[in-house]
Image (tube, rainbow, N blue to C red):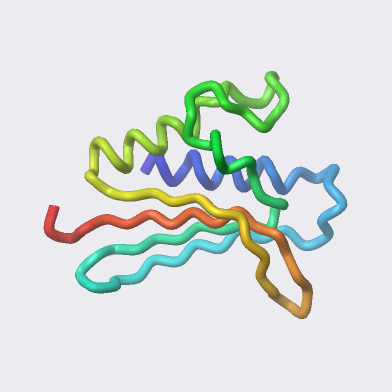
Length: 113
């Protein structure tokens, strides 16, 4: 639960009211594929710096808004505690006839664990 809260809070924080993004979206989808639970969470907050995103103390927010530990803890929760996989990517997508840049998290849990 904490891993999902961390990702959603990061998405929420990137969709800041002071941004020039008029329509703000967070999409969450869960489905079973090949006996695995695949959960995707994406937003249109413009993407994150992916290379260091799961490293401890890496923060894209101002110091007053974060410690840089959220995604590092999320990674450990999913991979170490639940033997899952988490992948982050930045892509673009079209929704409501508008193109959006997004951060896309894919989380995969084997149902056999």
